[in-house]
Every structure is written in C-alpha cells, then in structure tokens.
Amino acid sequence: MSQIQPELEDILRTLFDEYEGPITGALTAAEVEQWDSLANVQLVVLAERTFGVRFSTAEIAGLANLGALADLIRAKQG
Amino acid sequence: MSQALDDREIAPGAGPALKRLIAAQLAAFPEHEGFLRRRFAAGADDFCESLATTIETIAGEDLARLCEDYRWLAGAVLEEELFFRREGRYRLSSFAEAEALVYADPAYMTRYMNGLLLSQLWWSNHTAVLAWFRDRYLPGNGTQARHLEIGPGHGLFLLLAEQDGRTESCVGWDISPASLALVEKTFAALRRPAPSLLLSNLFEAQLGRFDSIAFSEVLEHLEAPAEALARVHDLLAPGGRAFINAPVNSPAPDHITLFETPEAIVDLVLAAGLEIEDVLLAPAAGASLDRARKLKLAISTVVIARRPL
Image (cartoon, rainbow over all chains, first blue to last red; front, side, top):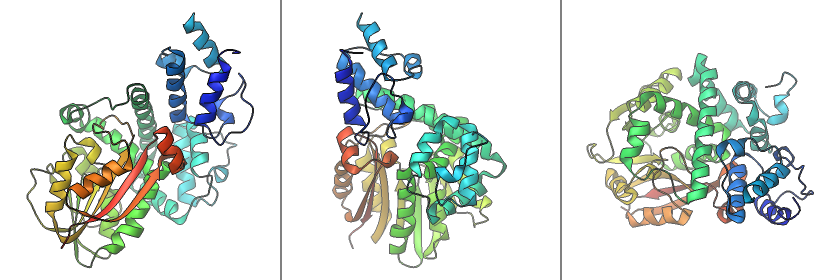
C-alpha cells in the first residue's frame, strides 16, 4: 500500500484522533477504539472521495484490515 | 456472547439488570461488544441501572426479540449513514415517503420502536437526553402540570413524565397505531395509569392548553419543522415549557429534514416565538463536541423552551 498509504494515514489520523499507534496494512478496527461501524462508513466514504473509487456494500463488509482497503483501492484504480 | 466474557468488564459498576441486558444484547449481536465496551468505558451509573430495569420490565419475555430488533435497527442506520456520507443528504425527502415506508407499516414500526427502546441505553446521547428530561426538565414544571407528548414512540419519556409527582395529566399524540400500542404496553408493564392517547397528527389534533410538551425526535421527521414549532407554541399555555429534542447529522430510515448544526435547531425554536431556558448538546458515540462538529457526527440537540407570559 506504499503509494496509497500516506493518504489513508491522513484519513485515519483525522477520523481517529485518539489513536497514536502505528498505521500499517495490518491495522484492524479492533485495535482502534474509535473505529466502530459508523466510523468505518466515514472512513470508506472518505477513501472513495480521495481516490475516486466506489465500493459495494459486500466489499465494505468484507474488508479485514487497512491493507485490504488499500488493495481494493489499487484494484479499482486499475 | 462468549461464555468466557465477563460483562462486568464491559460496564464497570453495572447493576444486575444492566448486566442481564448486555448479555441478552450480545447474544443477539456479538459484533456489538466493542461498541458497548466503549459506551460504558467510564462506568454505568444509577440511571443506567434504573433504565435497564424499566426496559427489562417492558420487554418481559420478548427481550431476545427486542435485542434482534435493535440489531436490525443498527444495520438500517448503517445503510442510511453510507447514503448520507456519500450524498450529503437524507435518503427520503417527503413525509409521504416516510409514512409509506415506516408509519403505515405496523410490523416495521414495531421493530423500529423496539430497536429505539434499547438505543435509549446503548447510545450514550440517547441516555443523556432521557436523563436530562428527568433531572433537568421535569423538575422545572410547576405542580399540577398538564403534560403532552407529541410522538411518544416507545413511551419512555411519557412514562417518566407520568411518574413525576408534578404531573397532573398525561396525554400522548401519535400518527402511528403501532406506536400508541407500544405506549400502552409500556404503561401496562410498569403498572402505571394509562395516559390519554390520541391517534392524530400535530396539526389536526384539537388545540388545548398544556403546561408542558415533550417533542422528542419528531422535527427531523417533518417537512415543515418551523410550522410544527409554531404549533407547539400555540399548544402551550402562557409560561408553559417544552422539551424539544432533534438530532443533527443523524440519518435514519424515516428522517427527512437535515439539521446540519445545533444552532439551526435553536434558531428555529426562537423563530417560533419561544424563549430558550437551557440547551443540551449530546454528541453520539461518546465523541467530543469539537470532534462531532468537525466530522459532522450526530449530535442530539435538546432545547428547553418556554412560551412567554
């Protein structure tokens, strides 16, 4: 997620301002207190806007970690 | 819920009723553990236990079904949140659409109200609003208060008003027969005298003079909230008080009017000719007010207003 990571990291730091740990592709919602289901929607929509992509409901539900989101963005960008 | 899960860790200080409700909710919705853990991270107070006892009594043998209904509601809200974040507006824009989808469908309405009943405990902003109604609003009423609630929903606010010693009479108006049936069920379960209930909308109901009006989570369901507040003004006796609660940036299946800031709601109340006595801003999910404003998160906005003498 090298090229996508910096912008995803900006989004995460904005949304989850209490989280001070490292942001890697392995990061999951369980590790970030503020990352609940509503915040996940906000994260996904901010990512859609930032990278000019659109996710289906099934794709959103199937995201396992931040790396999976980056992979999906990369796949959609072609 | 895992057998090994210690629910005392989810809600430090929880009493027995709250522990039972948490266990029932997690049995129906195990993925909600993290949310509830964060919800009660600061501990559960006496009001939470009192509320849990009331909800448990209302639910009776239907508790598991109510917990399923809450899970359904959480999913429905999530779908609306996705639409709202993408489009910057609520999905529905007319009362007729909301009526067809929700209010005129007793099964949908019952499931919705059941879910909202549990949200009073699981969503910290809903708990804060209900506690403020009991501890800040009702004590400001005079004795022998004639109290009206417009849109009583599950009946918890009306129940608290009836239980308050200053209330002389309790009236509830709602456009949904399913909602009125739930209010009756709530009062019967708690063995309280039934309130006077009327199937009617705000504009058709006969004018009366009330000393106290609860108008909670109704404005966002209306196409003309300003006219509704003018009606609340007219329904109040001079000097009478109103508890007006509406959420900011809070998508739901039947919300049609979007308030983007708490100030938009306060301004509407003032424009209706009411005076402001106090305001409570309760952000959702334990967010700070600054964070809620910055990220356009839901904020329950409550105005205690008074009709001038």
